[in-house]
Image (tube, rainbow, N blue to C red; front, side, top):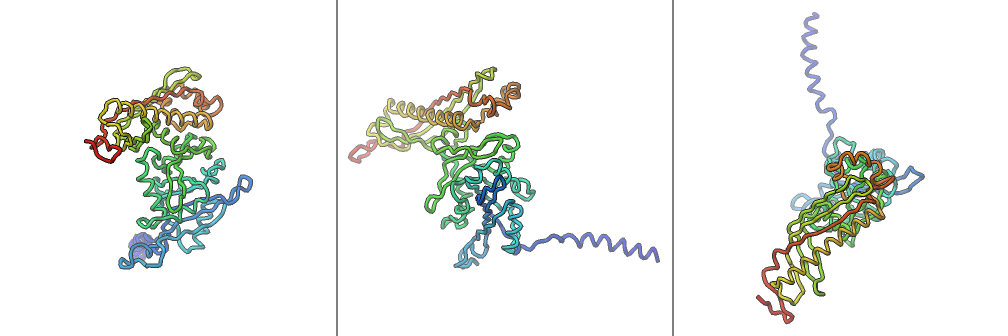
Length: 396
């Protein structure tokens, strides 16, 4: 009898293991696929702020033409907002209100309002839930904006009716312009937060029904708060220094006429000299190869003297942009977003360990160091034709 019972148990117990394989299964109809998130500040409330979380859910029935199964009058997305002091608790409340379980594995962008990121440490607290979640992908793009962040999740285009996807695609294609920076993802941000380094985050603005993307916010390392914004020209200078150029154009005035140069090749090298912490010098050398793609000059572009003028004006333009950026981040902001600390760490490790605590704080050796910039420019091509004269006749 005992043997029979033991035999039945030995057969049934393993079967129970297989029967529990789907205990946490969630039907796809119950999932709320979130592709975009916006966070706005509602109330500061004495260091215990209230925020508004807006999630953009995809509505599968609204995607595609009616002949493809989509409904003609149904929106392809739904934005749902909830307020609270903790994103985790807001997420729970959102689940109750929408009858959907927010699913973030397809999240593309997180947009924070400037009101949120201007508060000390608040951005770190808001990002913690996204960084800590093991289901969250590390390539989610982070952005800031002036005004209400949730308004950006209401702006789409006909070719991209999902606003979050429109913003995501814009970020993927626009950084080839030298006025924009590469997207910042939360995986990279995590490292900056742990090391308490100053960092940048792209800024976008809503312009009518389109989005403008050419500025960056500068964040101080220890407080993780926004301390200023670099405009388009300063962003160009930042890109030249930090080797983020992947093309772009420069507009110049040569002999009083507009000339546009396309950057086709670019190299940058930064070297820090000296062992005296109070007399550090950084030499930033940039090499640029470009083509003249547009000229309003009536002069022949085959004239070697004119090509030399274009090279000289391009050199001055690039150096001015870099100096403009250096003056801003060293003076007003005192935030090393130029990557000088990384170079010092690699090339002068012992010195770096000595001054690390006083690099951006205390003695602030970053602001004291001399940063010299230089550019070398070579114009390779002037175009397929020589010049168009004032009467409109092409001169070959």
